[in-house]
Image 1 (cartoon, helix red, strand yellow):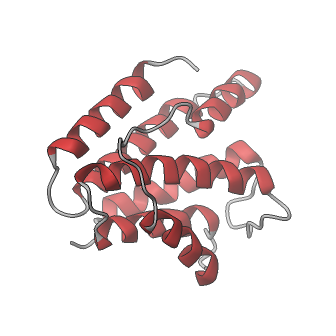
Image 2 (tube, helix red, strand yellow):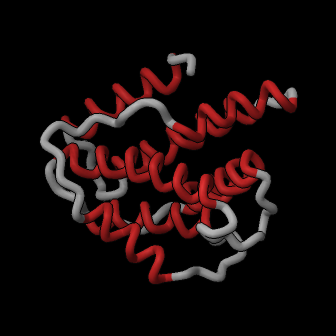
Length: 167
């Protein structure tokens, strides 16, 4: 299943908004040395969401892996100059994840940061970031063409707390 252009556009928008939270320019190259908190928090949140949704049906499909890698490419390499070794290592982490009880863990660090950013800068980025993260989670579930009962449960639980919980 090909990744829908709407999802690609959403990931690009999410990249711009998330970079804004961390004070990283739109097309700036990201490195762990220069942006350690950004790298840690993005990897934490996206592996948390992606891994738990991907394993909810007991199998990580190639489409789920592809969507996860695409999200990481768009967020870390907005300028298009992708470090494939880095993306492959993150992809490997997704594919080797083992968990008996999939459940996306709280908190989502990006949302916590967005709430603080909104208070400091009198903006409303958190609402849009929340919507885009949920859209990514929905796309992850549907990337392999169907939604299993396990994926539905994990996704609905995630949507409930991410849309209703105050951080």
